Image 1: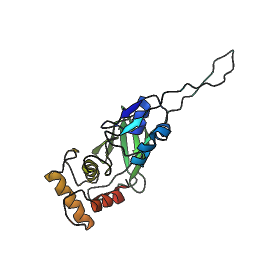
Image 2: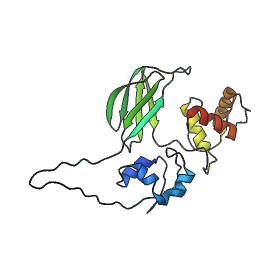
Image 3: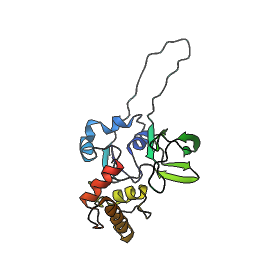
Image 4: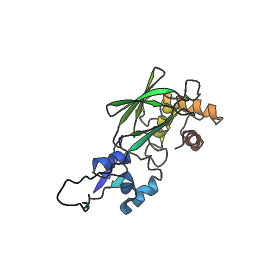
Length: 212
């Protein structure tokens, strides 16, 4: 069957919803060659993308008779990887924090560069980190690509500028005044022409700093 990607979707969430243990089996399926060409970074997919969902296959395994047998089902997990900085841009290194995801809360600690790298369920939609009394909520799966998108990558630019602290408006793909002002501020910081548009130099600078 074919599946149309919806807002908030990401590959492990889609795979989990269709009974596929590992999102790689979905992404690397031969029928998804065009999807892979369009989305070479599997972490960045876009609402409206079309994805082939293969039928489930039954698996069998030998087991001795005359007593109980134990089987372990494999289910892939995701990782939340974020770098936390203070308001001046300095990493919050080696800081204790709490992570709440899927209704469970646990203590975590940033590393020497301010990064958290924690396992989360494959279908999580929200994660909340509390550090130094500040609560940060992450919308998992809602960062859009900046290329091959019908909004010219504006929503992807908005998401990255928001996460970098330059933009506080809605992620709506609209190039309004607030978005353009945030773009200009980031262009100014990077020494780019302050066009206020989601042009290639801006996207390249965001991709370089953001990592995707």
